[in-house]
Length: 428
Image (tube, rainbow, N blue to C red):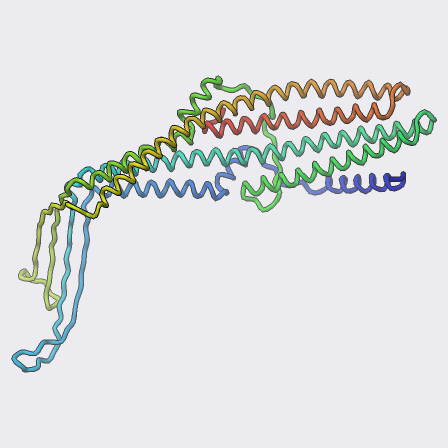
């Protein structure tokens, strides 16, 4: 690559970066606003809320099984009159009827109670699933929010890199004019400036992608920027390590859902076994029947009955139902135990990831401080011809790596904290 092509590439890249930076900024939103909007926009939240409504409807239906069934029927019919003694009869027979019926299951062998317990457990499962989904959606939103902020900070790092690269190029050019630097120094400085502008463009592209991702999560059709309403910093946890693990295996949304599923499976076994007991039902009715559209005392009738039902043999369907329910109960218990082990493992991993991210922040802050001082020294040494352009560019590269690592560590910490909160189902 000759000097002219390098210069053209630098100018083109820098012009593109400048044009991108002057675009109209998108609408900004705070973290709390983003989380609230995503709870309404994402289909998984709509589905989870719908599951709760369906479970509540099932619970009302289970309560309704304790109430009598009431039905009303009415009808009419027309037919030609029959022949009498071989003599044809003219005319049409018409009849009208109406009946009000009531039935009530007096005894069902515990089936209704088991179904009510099962419905209550299913509602608890749906509610725990809704809570779990709320924190899962909140985690997705926080990840997108912090990724947008991360991209913004990386742009600042890239802009600082461009500025330092330009200063190095100016210094190399000035030294070349004075005869204390070679053409190679200037070319290396130009290459670094080109790389810095490329990094700036990459960071700007990542920010645009992050903004569209955030917009999609909150239900917007355009890019949305993250607006910081509180310092993004390390905050002490309100719970100890042991308390976090204990909370994860006892109160986490996934644990609540698994526990409720176990209760529902237990109730399904009781409901299946209820088929081995007889059922007792009461029925009553009051009706009217006449060939004319008129009520009379002779046309009114009533009935009252008490029935006992017990299937002696139904082709082993009861046995199959009980076996299925017992298998589901065993599976639910195994899933509950596994959910507790998984919650413990995830809590341990999340806490350690959070601690590591916090330590990385401190280490990278020290690295940025050291790299900044090293760059200051190398600039001074290069100015007095005590070091080469390679030493200066190496120091600049070390500072860029340290600054990028610090940005990554800061937002890795925020995301790790959000993951822990999602696991526990509560803010920390």
